[in-house]
Image (cartoon, rainbow, N blue to C red; front, side):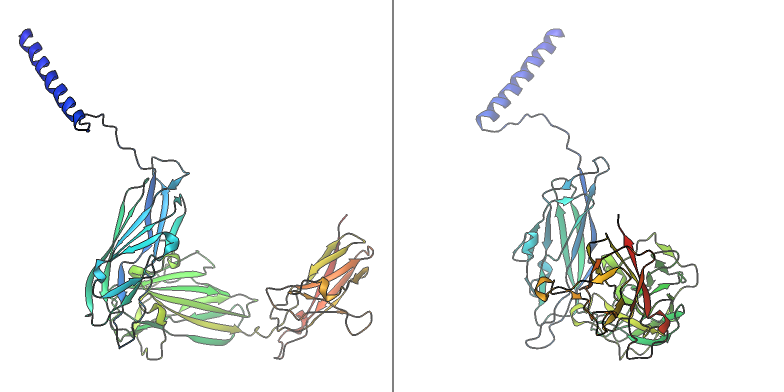
Length: 458
């Protein structure tokens, strides 16, 4: 038995040697040591990419409407087995656009992101992406051709490779035809400071294609804060929220328009003069990434906000963003809109020094001259115009000798500059800045003057 086993081992060794020699003679190595594949150090994800791309129909000779941007946002992060610092390297995004053959022209490849086109395929060689950061770009543009029938057309297939991360893919449905989302804009005056402003978002679809999924309304408050009331709305904060996202079931057929059955309520600040409640409307499946609140955001605890049909004939939209979304606003003014309020300031410096101080613009400023009475021990410094920064406005002597200094008018972002010399220290020295009321009736002229103080630096 031992002799038989030894002879078998010799014959096996001879066969293996013959195979190796034959492979070597052919310039190939057949037997090699296999190493385990290296675990990926990075993870790539799609932060935002369209789920549905609407290709507008070519509606008239010589008129090809612009298709919406096909924007893609990628994010890089460390793999669970990797470190917290690093890059996703050699990232390449490949776009299979064969769905557009005979339906649209591809153009405007994004050279800044290394995008190149070959037929109906676009490939983008992206810069390395640092963990915690991303790439945000529009790889190509699409221009419709005439004679394309409405309806489902196929899909865009996106594939993203990296030397350090697993491959990821996304499929975007392409529809020929386009919704045209529209909204309502309104203005409101006479709001009491600290009082409520009520926005009733309204939107419609004047396109040739319906939205078959849900609709999302995003509200952003300026000059007020939102009450987190409705159960189907998310808010960026539990109190004093400034953003809300409300989701509604679809569809939104062609020719329909809706408004919410209750208002979104905001509370103005006591000092608010004017503000806006901006809102935008999106197909829920393709809400703009930066506009979307996280799923874990605070939810309202009250009733569900619903929709009711309205006449949307007067609603307006954007030709450049027909299918992607629409924006509306409620602009408001409070009863303090004509209240001009001076803002005090402090002159800081050492005795004997010349000091440059910016005079703050008044609240509700109408572009009038401000009058500054300098504190005791402080004198105005004037210089020839060629020695001054031309963009800024510099204070000058007033008409009355020893009287107030004239400052402005000015306009932001440029400054109104007061050049002075601190001649001596005067304890408790105090001046003032006064701004005249505007052309409209100023409801509170007691706040048209504010103090000017001196802070002496040792």
